[in-house]
Amino acid sequence: MTDLLWPFASFGIVTAIVLVGVLLIWHIFRERRSGFPLQDERTQRITGKAATYALYIGSYFMIALMWIRLLGKEFQGFPALDMDYALVSSILVLSVSFMILSWYFGRRADS
Image (cartoon, rainbow, N blue to C red):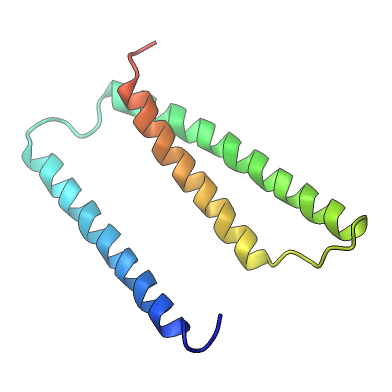
């Protein structure tokens, strides 16, 4: 990243982290004031199911990423994959898949 864009990117990253933290704390306080239990059997089952599927999706993504890196480097002569981007993309796939699956299983009727 160029020296000109880095301060703007850093400010954007810090702003996003602070915003997510504030929203998370606000959501926790709102749930506690509602008077309903935060975790019951249904939400624990939904969270467990979403976490299991997100782990599988993330593991398969990382295995595919390693195979693409290996085959691309050895047989096609591609330059080595930057591990920083591979790590960030793996974390994003795990996190986003968990959020989407939690939302999906929460909206879907119990089966």
